[in-house]
Length: 299
Image (tube, rainbow, N blue to C red; front, side, top):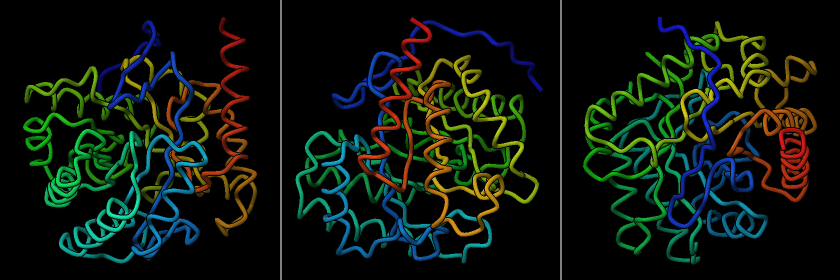
């Protein structure tokens, strides 16, 4: 395994369809829109016909990115076919794009499968919104290797979450860095421009049984070490199990305050994008104040 040193590069900044992401910009909020009834937090699940309404609400509350997913990746979630996932995502996208002008808001498609990504991108292209497209692959191109080939063809931005066999199975800082580096290297070998088009996600959460809360607490505490990869950093910490473990709260409905605390620390430690179920004024306030303290501390 490659040994990583704490090397902090200069400023990390990218621009995706007029949205600047990185050190020189406000921390961006990504609102979660699940159309998968199996998802662990039912407050993020919406029927297709409700997607346009919640999307408008999230954008009005300063969401820069909407993350649409048709498959739950939570442990023990029921299995669905790729076609079922594709149909869910297409239905949600069609409802959203036909009912509401997203303007420059980025749309992230949370999928591990080329078939789903292709269908979503084709639909966004038909509405003239192909520049708003981002792929969010929680498997770091492990589940469907052909997804990397497709990305190299279309050259659309991608979020890579640390994984090497199944989603989120990276354990510890060194392995997480190595798995993210592998995904970046794979795309570069295919001719994909990763400097401007890759966002990294250290895979906070209990994705596999062995990944207990100390691993997640370490990732949040040492988040700035991921700057060595010189890519914008996304964190998905919203209502996750490590917060429940610390607070002894099994129900995700009761984890909002813990989520806001972890969000503040993650932003202070360098998160550029916060993926959240709670696209609210309170979340925006926490992010804004945390970034102000961080910028003051390191100015």
